[in-house]
Image 1 (cartoon, rainbow, N blue to C red):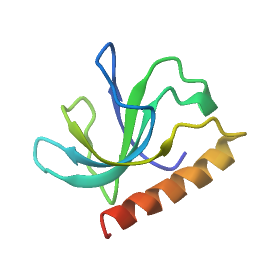
Image 2 (spheres, helix red, strand yellow):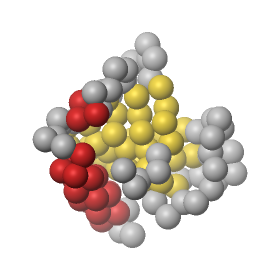
Image 3 (cartoon, helix red, strand yellow):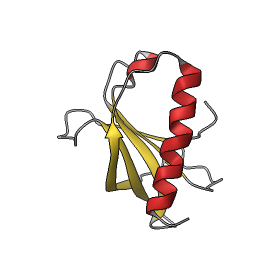
Amino acid sequence: LGFPTVIICLRDYQHPMYGVYAVRVQTKHKTDLPGVANIGMRPTIGGKAARCEAHIFDFTGDLYEQRVGVDLIKFIRPEKKFAGIEELKTQIAQDSETARKIFSI
């Protein structure tokens, strides 16, 4: 979709309300990387299990199989099923801009 993400499976852990959040991601080497995340089932693409997908702004590193932490900073909107992928991509771009404004970046 053009928005690389860190994917975190939620398993049986208690999770927050499904939706989109402004987040800060912690990695082994960096802390407080701002981004935007969806927590939920991903209904537009037929997701089968709840998970957190966090897009870190302006980040080009590789976090594959690394442990990360995600702090939820502010709720942006509830999870929603879109009519198609293009509508979803447009909304992700809008959510990203909303989160950037929250972080003043």
